[in-house]
Image (tube, rainbow, N blue to C red; front, side):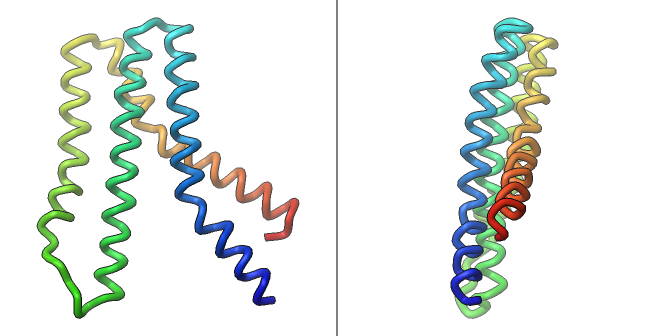
Length: 139
């Protein structure tokens, strides 16, 4: 039973890396599809939204890791100023991106919003992959 538990831990510990990789692949494919179907403005908006979503996902992952460290290491608590600043900076970055895109081209705003939903697609891909592995390999 111990070997199975270790296999499962190794598999599930790679989820964040797989989600990031899937988001990258979807960013490239989505920008190419948007360019071919709607033109460069919406593709540029999508690419900007995808970049902000990737950065947002990375920062959120770091904040959650820091919160988990704070919960488990009560004696080595670092000041929370940087963590809170990064948390708020995520939303400021999204607002600046949306404003810049909106003033440049309203059509690009649709692409930006589509790109911002990239983490949802990445997590959905990971959930489908984990379901597939669980059904085929019994993890």
